[in-house]
Length: 91
Image (cartoon, rainbow, N blue to C red; front, side):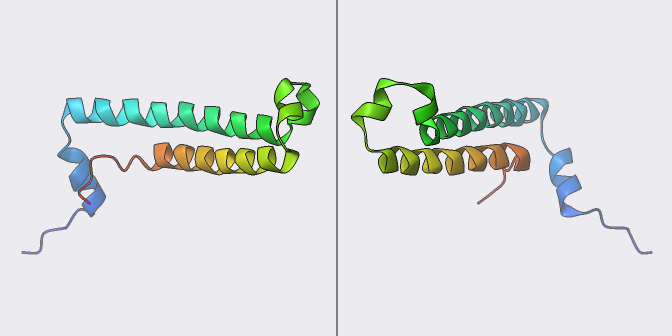
């Protein structure tokens, strides 16, 4: 007799305990939140001239835009990592 094989993802999800599922949910929410904060800070740095802050005067515009771009990229990465939920898998 031929047994149907379940996809690998389904069998891994079934093996998770309630505690592990809670950890994954918590880390995912944290990644979404931190991703939004980093992305917001990046856009703030990129468009800092519109906010009339002291930072725009003290630092070079290209430095702030470069730092802001890095923050946006990191924020998008954190949001992606929260979406993928790849926390407890073996490396």
